[in-house]
Every structure is written in structure tokens, then in C-alpha cells.
Length: 463
View 1 (cartoon, rainbow, N blue to C red):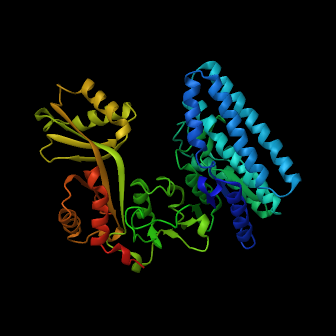
View 2: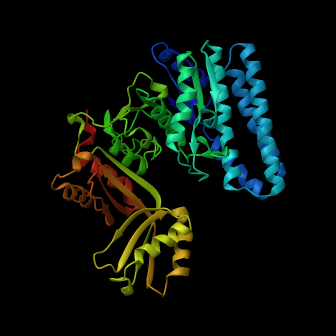
View 3: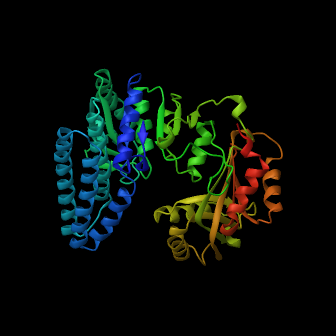
């Protein structure tokens, strides 16, 4: 069971989560993975900016605020004075370590990727301690563990580390399985691992899902439950489409597409560790635990295979179109463009090239736009690229569904529905898997486009 930041955002919510774990622990062996309290990781990222500026005052204020938040929660999420006192001592040790780390970083006046990961680990470390003691408070045998202590070993790509699964499987199973046999509930820090030298690493934003599926794969879990603040994966964003429905079942491939196309409920790589073993994953709402949520399966039932299952969108994106006659028929042009983007740490979200080879269109995050255009201008403009055109307010719309595969006329229905609502399509991309069809529209039209497709494929009628 993984609990997201909103699920543990207050003392009442921590108590609710503890009761939820207790109610399921009667008939199950449970491993718990917890995220940092909602907003804490963002605060830690923000304070690292103050460290870069050498602002000792900001750091001192942050420590006081950070300590108060966690101490207040510890105080009100326990009923017994004994557990409250033990937890206070544990939190004091961790917060003192955080203070020492921040002061050391201020003295050096720099934040490296390695020290940033160390800093970001503190949010999860404090949450797991609080949740573990909340379980002790209601009579559950439990132990709080970091990802490092659990045995999650990763490469040294700080900020986006990948697990070294063979080593991790051995270490995690040796650590966790004996605890489960003894009736102990391990409470593990989400998002955090360690490289082979013991340095703390993080798995990228939303990495607690990833931690849960890594552990599930290592111990051959029966299921993974991702507890969050939504009822499950939906046919569309309910803020845009009022009659959006929760999807009861989706395939691994569909869930991964939805995660990549902005469904915030899951880390895009979270399903990788459990694909081979076919471990089912369920996305459930902590605050409506009576709902079964969405089950993610290797092979969903036939009757749940809609042509299109969900319509997603990604906003705050920009379209870059590079053109030049000298690009035509010259091998390696695309490689040069993508190499420059990669070297400048710019993620390309979508690509399309005309058959004439005279233009390549790319979608990037709006935050990366300046850097992308500057690097292309400096390296290639006037050499192989003649012009760079930018449209800076676009959105990607994606229709996802395994039922699209091999069905004639799906693209016609999609673009027909869009045209009826007077929305202009600026760029299109579809992979050979036919699992999704993505296209770019002006940002002001994106909500209209989502509603049009939801209506066209009658997604509000999904059972």
C-alpha cells in the first residue's frame, strides 16, 4: 500500500491511514510506502534555492517552520504519551541532521544533484516515522525504514535514479519477508533509494508509486494499492468534463500512456517492475475507501476494451518547428537536433516530421522553451536550419485506448469531432502500437477538444 502526500497531509489523515492499514492487516501481510506530507518536497526544493544564494536567515526560518509542522502533527496524531514521546525523540534526531545538512550546504554555497537528493529525502523520512508511530499507537507491530535500509539500490543518476533490480530483489526480499513473517508492518520511505556507494538517490517526482512496485516485484506481492486523493483513473479530468467516469479496469499499457499524458495519479515508470510478473495494481481513494477504484491488469476483461478509454491533455507546452531545404535527404539531421536538446537537458514530449524531411516539429515544456530555442539557434541556425518557428501556448490532447488497435476510422472520428467544434489541429503523432493518438491544439481550445472527444466516444456511458 502506497499513500500519497495528500493522504498524510494532516494528523486526522494520518490517523485515518493508520486505521485503514489496521483494518486490512487482519487478513493480509502489508508493506506500507509513504510520500512526504503534501507540499513538503516543494518546500525543500525551494529552500535549496535559498542555499544557493547563501541566505542563512531563510534556512533558519525554514527549519523552525519545518520542525513545527512535523512536531504538531506528531503531537496530535498520537493518543498515548509514551508513543508521542518516543516519536518526538526520533523526529528531533532527523531534524537535527537536516539542520546540519542545510548549514553545511550554506557554508559551501552550492547545491549539487547529490546533496539535493539527500536534502529531498527528509520529507519522506519524517512522514514514515510519524505514520509508523501512529500504527504503534493503535497496537500494530511496525518498523520505519528508508529506501536505503529496505535495500533499494539504484544507479547514481541523482534526481531520476533507476533501480538496479537484480541487487535490489535480493536485498529487499531478505529484509522485508522476515519482517512480514514476524507480523511486522514495514513503513518505507517512498521516492528514496541509495546508489552502490550508499549515497541517497531519488526516483523522480511521484517516485513513491515506483518504490511500491519495486518492493512488490521483489517480494512477489499479490497486489499493489496506490492510495491517493482521486477515485481512480478517469475517462477525462472531472474538472473539465462534468460527467467523467472512473475506469474500472485498464491494461498496463493504457495506464502507462495515461501516466505519460498527464494523469498525475501514477509515476510513468511505476509499472515497469511488475510487468513481467503481472502483479495487479489498484488506484484507490484514501477518503472513499469503500470505492474499489481502478484496477490495472495485464489482460483486462474483454468487455472493458473500449475503442477509446480516456482523453488526457498536457498544458503549459510549446511547439517548435525547424525548417530548412538543406535538411532534405541529409542523414543525421534529426540526430543532431535531438543531441543538442539532450545535452541541454530538454525533454522532447512529442515529435513529428514531414515526409519531405524539410521540417521537424517538436513539443517541449514551456519552462524549457527559451533554452531549447537558444541552443538550436547557437548550434544549427544558418547551417542546416533556415528558420525556427515557435508557438508558445499549445496543449497536447491524447486519446488512449487499446481498442483503437486495428479499428478503421478512429482517426476520422477523432478529427471529425474536433472539426465540428471549430478546433484547429497543429500537429499529429501516432505510434505503430495504435494505443494512443496525440495531437496539438492551441491552449485556448484544449478543454473544448477534450469535451468533444469525450462526447464522440460516449465515455460517460462506460460501465
